[in-house]
Amino acid sequence: MNNMNETTTPEKKSKLPLVIGVSLSALILGGLLVFILQSNSLKNNEVVESSGSGNDNYTIEEVGGVDLRSLAPNLDREVQFPANTPLEAQAIMKKQIGDVAIRLKKDMNRADDWFTLGVLYHSASDYEGARDVWNFLAEVVPAPGVATVYENLGKLYKYNLKDFPKSEMYLKKAMTADPKMISPYFELHELYRYLYKTESTLAVDTLISAGAKFPENPDPYGLLGAYYRDRGDKVKALEVYTTALERARKAGNVTQIDGFGAEIEKLSN
Image 1 (cartoon, rainbow, N blue to C red):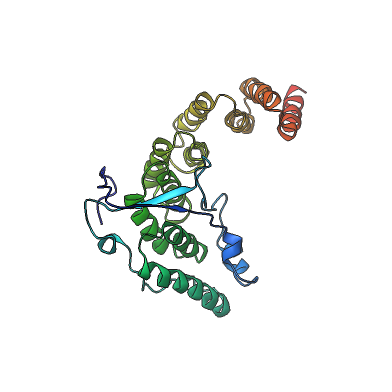
Image 2: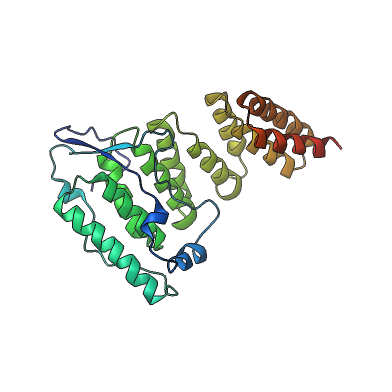
């Protein structure tokens, strides 16, 4: 597989548009796998199942004329479950992964199934399996669709594989690949706030950048207000929450208007 740090210019010999509408709840049969999701979940650890910009048209592209089978991860790979996963849950997940693998062996260009496979591996807490699938997709899915793949890799390295420099790299790649996607900014903010380069100003800088990039969205300033509030800086918190409230009013978001208004009232007392 090509080095992920290199820029690859795909040779567009085949480009097959495929709509991805992956719903994790639809993939999981019954309630057995709730155990997996609950016992191994971390804050905001959900993978992204569609493009943040609303563009769900993904494609597979041949890379430099290389056969996709030479780039693709092993479809016969044994699923690696945590030791405490019930056998019944393992059996259900193995069947789902096996069914997707069968379809992919027949047609490697099924981008929707590749994406589903990565989600299933992640749901089973087989993070190396999810990583291998998403690394492959990062090579063969063009922008802006690849931004979703990059964000999933960023979250994977942030919450599960604990490689924070790689998390930072992939979240930044997601921002570049799809400039309309705001969620990588929030993930990067949390990375800097709680886990990596925590002594820097990057947690704040990231939200300020998001606020400028998305001038109608109140969320960056809502998060920034909470950041200052939690650090006891009432003056800055009030200033930022006021900006968030103004944006929420322009957007007509009643829930946010009430929420930001309540924060301002508490800080003013």
